[in-house]
Amino acid sequence: MTRPYASLVWLVLCGCNAPVRFSDRAILWREPDTAPIPVPATTDALPDYIGLRDVAYLPLDRELKLDYFREAVNVNALDEVPDSTWFEDLRRIADDRGQMRLRSFSSAQMERGAMLDDPEPKPPFTVTKGKGAGANLGFEVKDALGRKYLFKMDPPGLVGLDTSTEVVATRLAWASGWNVPSETLVDFKASDLRLSPEATTRDPRLNSKLPLTRALLDQMLHTAPAAADGTIRAIASRWIAGQIVGPFAYFGRRHDDANDRVPHEDRRDLRGFGTFSMWINNIDSLETNTLDSYVGKTGKGHLLHYQQDVGGAFGARAEEPISWWMGTDIYLAPSRILTSLLTVGLIKQPWDGDNVRVDRARLVAAYPELGNFDWEHFEPAHWHPVLDNPAFERQTRRDRYWGAKRVLAFNEEELRGAIRSGHYRPQAAERLFEVLWKRRERIARAYLAPVAALDFFRFEKGGMCFDDLWVVAGLGGENVTRYAVSGDGVIPPGESEGGPQCVGLRVQDGYRVVELRVQRAGERHFGPPVRVHFVERGADRRIVGIER
Image (cartoon, rainbow, N blue to C red):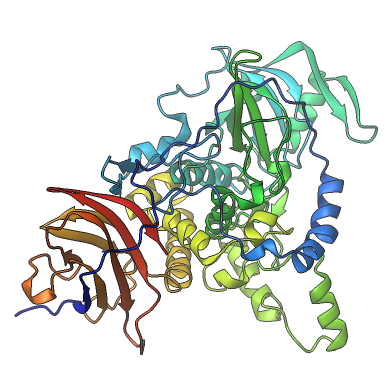
């Protein structure tokens, strides 16, 4: 029996010279942002100011400014993000012909994440300082090998809600290319802790420093959930190397960093982090959870930019599971309040209704270590962190497509490997996999549809082949999908040997462009184009640009 395949429709064979849009030069795969700079001034995260700014100023800024339809700046000719001090695509394999493909991680690599070959934290642990910021219980320690860590524990009665969430979410962010700390779970007992004579903590009532005594430490440990044998679970976050100079903002630039040339709201690696964040439900994607570190000798170093805390993900947020509305709304939404007042509450919000609350309460009861995290109520268009994020708000369809590709890159083995690092009970691990896999599919349907989701163009079989990411993602319709192709020197389908996802090309020197469109099941017309620009000299072809 012959299986039906997608068809390739030959539209136009143009013999004219294509207009030159891209320069004939090597693709930029590394952003030059590591030039030596003086140590920048240290800035402090001010949660109250940031909250007020993000609630009041940024929504108004969004309404009055005209830059919300501007495309991201830090992209190369292939519409990809070059590696930088902000982002490094660990999957990417690129060659000098403008061709790109992605490598996969093994399950063991995903289980290790940013730890790589770093040994596990080794007891005894010397406590040097109480954790000074954030809602999680924790303290700074040095292990037996002299390595510095931040230990963070779960809230009472909710083992795994914070610790397992952060260790898994951090691995997913690492594999997607963002800079994150090296983190792992550690089980310890009070007897594994030593107290440094110089240890201090902060009095939260007076916001003042005071000595950390054994009695105070025991009081902290008493509030942490412990097993019957006294074992306490913590996430051990390896101290970020370099000199910490505070968080980075999601808009503007750091003016004392000469390498910081692109406004942060116009960086695709920050815009696309919004699409990744909606996948893992990282509602706490705020400035206070970022960090800049100066690496290198004073005056000869540069900054590295970290997503230093992605633990406000899945259904967790510090001291308890997230509320039912989180993930679909912000703390204070003037437009929502006004709409409710004018309609006397008749227009319901996506998160409103007893059925939503009941469903999510049932989830928390069944999977307390996951909190309010599901796929059934997830709609990408309605997802929102708890405060406006100026980079997320400026995402265009091209940014979302790029972000969706980060999510779609995960296969089942990789995802299960990351989840294994969280030490969940089997039922919770399977539920977490199901939720992430289903949310992955919804993101794919939402953000692949508005573009021609054809990618990873390469020269083979006498022509140019590509991957249809919609088909690769398993979204269906591969037997009825039609591809329309036009361009200079294109061989009609009947004369090409490449198959349904390859375009035959005649040998023809010069600058050339091939345009492709897709028509999927149920669509009446072909969608928007993707144009591949390449240069041919003799038998050599090299991609110099891609338009979407």
